[in-house]
Structures are given as structure tokens and as C-alpha cells.
Image (tube, rainbow, N blue to C red; front, side, top):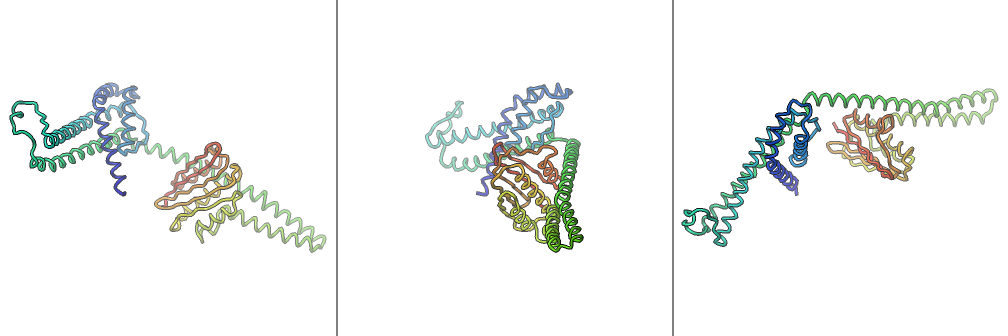
Length: 379
């Protein structure tokens, strides 16, 4: 069972190399066109179409990671010029493979059925038939030649992939520019998320803790003037509620048990407190790094808050898995339609996850269900 993926990959490479070799006539014709129009900012349409077909073939069959670099005329000309040489080599290997298969069929037919494939008189005058001894000699020789020919075709596929990596991959400057752009966007989203978090904490303090503190102060003042024990008892109850509110706000900012007990008990407490009935599936053999635990906590907390506010769900679930990377999934059976629009909660989550080196995906069709997936590196 463990060899089947490797065998499938090998067969895909062989098929991709053979398919690339068969396009050699088109490569030759359009390579001339591409070289003649290399000064243009963009390649002509037939050249772009052929290079696009090669990009799809190379990424799907030859395991090349296409980063989507923009195609210029000079890149297309260089790639197709190198493809001409690689495609010719592939055609030669395919021709040898076809000749070997024909020879094998002819030899078997002559040995089993005394069928003769002759084209010249000297051959016709040769001793008839193929003997068993000669077949026993030819079979291992043919097997070795077949193996070498297939390895040659595999090598053509490797060269084809190298040509795509050389000409169609983004340059170092393009990669750096893309990274700078990504970091700029992530920084803006992270700052927006931090501003939103500060605003939420301020609202919690203003609308909850501050109002209760004012009520306690009024009760104590009235009790001092009236000398009433009942008012002091009520004030004591309000103080207890005030302490609970302060603890709740502090826990939402960052629970202290995250440092002492780890992520799993914190998430279980979070799911138990959720407004929508939520289940937790924990599949982590060891404790996660501190920064990863903090990010996962914020992701789950914010996602469950969004479920309670917007999803109209009857149930939700949280799943955490860890191997070389951490996979977190938060789902619900609500109305769906969640999107990572700028200025909204999911965009802030995406920025926070990106700042931690991870990725966030949202699958939320209209009518639900909604699934938020997060992948984070463990290191």
C-alpha cells in the first residue's frame, strides 16, 4: 500500500513527459514566433496559449509548483526554446520505446506462431523462426532496455520540470515584492484586529464593569446616609458580581490557565460557556507551543462569538489536530454566508493567523454549514 502513491507519481511523470514530447512540432513553430516577438511586453495569443497548456501539464503531471508568475514575451521565448530541445529528446525516447515494443511483439509472434516480419531478401533466407534459447536471451535484455528507456522518459520529465522552474517561476525580486505586499496587508489586518480587540475590551469595561461599579458606589453612599443593613447586603452582592465581571473580561483578554494548564482545558471551558451548544474534538498528543496556543484560543473564541451573533445556529463544533502543523476547524449548522470582508471579524482573524505564519480559509455557502479552517506551523 505504501508504494502505490509513489507508483502513481511515477506514472504521472511518464505520462506528462510523453504528452510534452508529442507537442514538439507546435513547440518548434511557436518558439520561432516567440523569439521573433520577444521584445513585446506580452506574448502573442498562440504563444501564451501553448505556454499556458505546458504550465497546466507540468503542474498537474510533473509535480511542479506553479506560483503564477506573470508571463512575458522573453520568458515565453526562453521556455519554448528550451522545450524544443527537451521535446526532441522526448520524441527520440518515445521512438525507441515504440521500436522496442514492436520488436517484442514481433519476437513473441515469431516464437509462438511462427509469424515472420520480413522486409528484405537476406532476412527471408535466414533460418526460420525464433528459438526458445534466443527468446530466453532476448527477454532479460529487452527488460533491461525497457527499464532504461522508461528511466530516460522519466528524466525527460525532470528536465521539463526544470525548464518550467527556470523560465516560468517568479524571480527573486518578484518573490520579495509579493512577500512585502503580503506582509503589508497582514500588518494592516493585524492592526485592525488589535484595534477591534481594544474596542471590545473598552465596551466590556464601559457597559459592564463600569456600570456595576457606579451602582455599587451609589448603594454604599445611600447605605452610609440611611444606615441600612439591607443596602449594604445588596452592595456586597453587587461587589461580588463586579468581581465576576472583571474576571470574565480578563479571561476573555487572555485566560491565565492558558499558561498553567494548556490549551485543551481552556477550549473546553470556552465551548462550555458558548451561547450555542458546542462540542470539542481534541487530537493533540502533546502540548502546543505558547504562541500557537494563544493564536488558536483567539481564533476559537472569536469564531464562537461570531456563531452566537450572526450564524443563527443550533449547534457548533471545534476540532484541533496537531502533527507537523496544527489544524483547527470551527463549524456550525447556521445560515452560512460568512465572508472575510475588510473591517469585519473574520478579516481580523485572518490577519492574526497570517501574523503567526498560518492560513485561514472560510467555507460558508448560503444556507450553511459554515467551516472555518486554520493551519498553523508548530514551530
